[in-house]
Length: 293
Image (cartoon, rainbow, N blue to C red; front, side):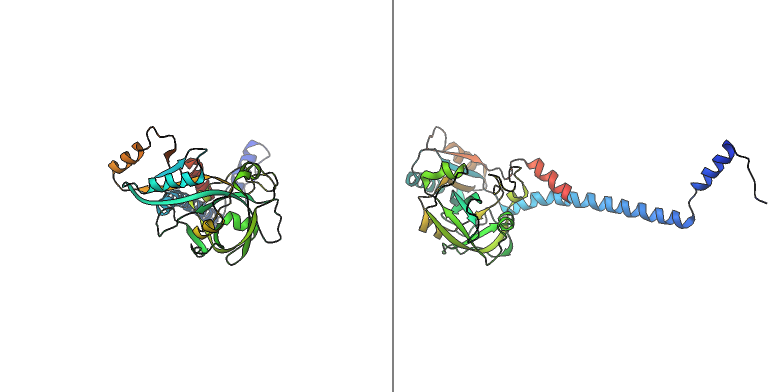
């Protein structure tokens, strides 16, 4: 005969105790669930750690430059190029890449030319080099002998809905319009040229998001990247709106070469050099990658 308890604290306690006692099947299910959650948490931690180290591995593979050399404001394009080429011939230099940071508007043929103001890299020389290498996601590199080919990053591909084999257009502006186009004001382009996308690439810098890169504002294309070819510069430069010329330099792997190269700029007012920073904030990039993983 089952035990009958009168209403009261004892009876209530017994009921609660029975209610909290799971069946065998439920206990096994809970054990499996706990194991799965623990496994997912452990896998997530491992994935985050791997993602964290993958950033450093990606940067190492990219092989960023050791120093960036720039000329002083007001130096004419011709003199600036002469100074940078002289620097690139120094005995401490193992590899170099000379480029101009130009300002263009990128859009699809027939697209809205009011959007798409962005900076692009226009290399003057892209010799065979393993410095500042792109991770090719789709397609292949642009032919340096062709002025009508380009590679773009995933951000620009998404903004323009463009892919390998598509043609995009870039509006080019004369050098004296740099302040106008750079501040987002409308002005007539010097020319509009069509470029065929040969590849979609990724750089370590693409892991870092500019908070001002939002739809329909001035900084919408801040995260976008496009690189032209030396043939492009030969055809359309040097009278292009730009933020100057840079020379990316990889030094010979010894401390003496680094000291001598840095010391060569002491007291100079026409050029200067500074170390490369792949990210504006390395900690933020690592944290974002860990979180996403």
